[in-house]
Amino acid sequence: MRIGEVRVRSVLSRSGLPGLRYSLNPYRGCQHACRYCYSPSVLRETRPWGEFVDLKINAVEVLGEELKGKPRGMVGVGTVTDPYQPVEARAGLTRGCLRVLREHGFPVCLQTKSDLILRDRDLIEGGDVEVGVTITTMDERISRVLEPGASPPSRRARVLEEFSSAGVSTWLFLGPLLPSLTDSEEGLEEVVEVAAGTGSLVIYDKLNLRRGVMERLEGALRELSPETLRILLSPALRSRAWKEERERVERICRKKGVRCEPAFGPSSEGEAPLGEHGHP
Image 1 (tube, rainbow, N blue to C red):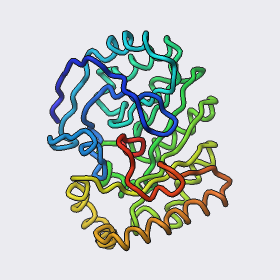
Image 2 (image 1 turned 180 degrees about the vertical axis):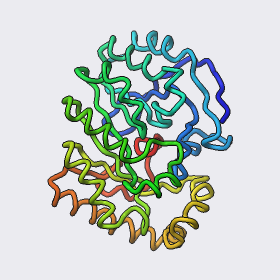
Image 3 (image 1 turned 180 degrees about the horizontal axis):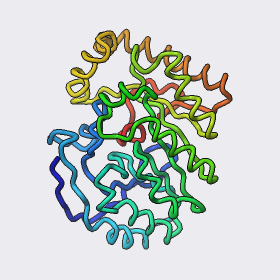
């Protein structure tokens, strides 16, 4: 893993993602190395994804200056790379940015696959902060292959439990749904039960096959589920699977009394917009 340092002129961007006015990413690159991540395409990044992280070492200072001239609005932290990837434990850039956002009275939406976020309870609880956790599957064997650097699903579920019990608004990102691998009735029920137990909204999404995704994912799918690979390589089968997945998720959520919605609109038929609200 190559850890580098860069200095930036700006860290706050306008966001086109639902519910967000701004996006903020203290890092470029991600140690979680999720096989399905499409951030490299969004960033036009050509370096091997999951093998490097650039620390925006002046992010906290730059953010403090930028906020002085900005109207208040929801700031999404971790829209393209996970703000609580392992390097954050020593670099503390996300924590520093979170402190500055709170000082300036900006509402914050955090999304992660890491229980490192629990370190920052003092800045999250009692503030205008919501916490989203991505749980693709509760099957730890599958997760280890697809999301090798992320916290195990059971620890991510604990994040929702801890913050929900403290009165923090929480949501669970269920995605990407992978046909014949993570979309079974039993598997989806396990994830939705986490949302039910924590009062979390479920936001679900399909796999976004942007440039480079299949190349990183193919080897893992040959190991885990060749049938999934067969479906994903066929546009017709992929479309049919997504329709069935949407119906299954909605039905299970109704049964469990859980609110749910697709990630990028009522049908979420098209490709997701630029940004990474689902797969940091």
